[in-house]
Image (cartoon, rainbow, N blue to C red; front, side, top):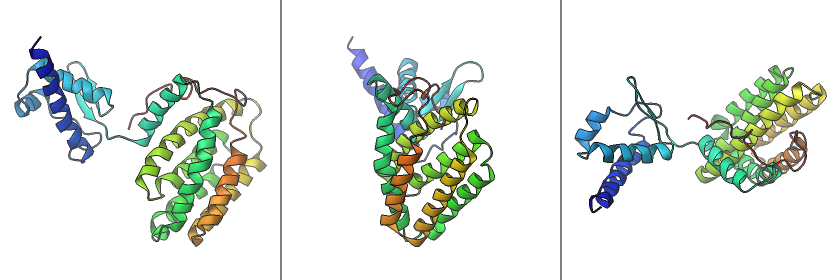
Length: 257
């Protein structure tokens, strides 16, 4: 009994050290961890303690452990997509309506767009990326599922390019959750009523206006336009009705970084 707490503490210390290396980028995303034999030499602990450290990191989503002859551990840096997955689980457990996610996005995404417009380096960092996505949207406008995917990437870029790390993470998690919902909706609706081409073109025109306002640095104007655009666009993805509760369709698989 007296050895268990010490073993737990040692496992946490090993996990703490490896976690720090992952967060600092010393262990690259997608890279394999060193073999267990090498790590045990580096961290002189028992095999059960080492395995517990690996379980801690795996539970946090920082590594994936593959068992078997070709096994080993692969590093995953934390991402907004994974946070979106975990957020989805929490909200599903609370029986949260997807409309609440939409409401949250209507508040945070316009703020991110305004920050994009306020970036002094927006001509190099923001505008080219948004323009490329806008052009891709127009090129794929005939395919509903494809164009919805590009549209979501445009909106996600408004967040990821805003330059504010806390907003990028928090709003990015909401975007990831809404994107999963909207992509699922697009797949279903294509097989039933579809979305008129004129509606897709109107959305594309609005994206073009958003891009132009950001390029001009018109933060207040782009904030208003994105709010209006989201209010209008979010009326569409409601295949289960206006009070659809977040469910397994949105979180059917854990996103891999």
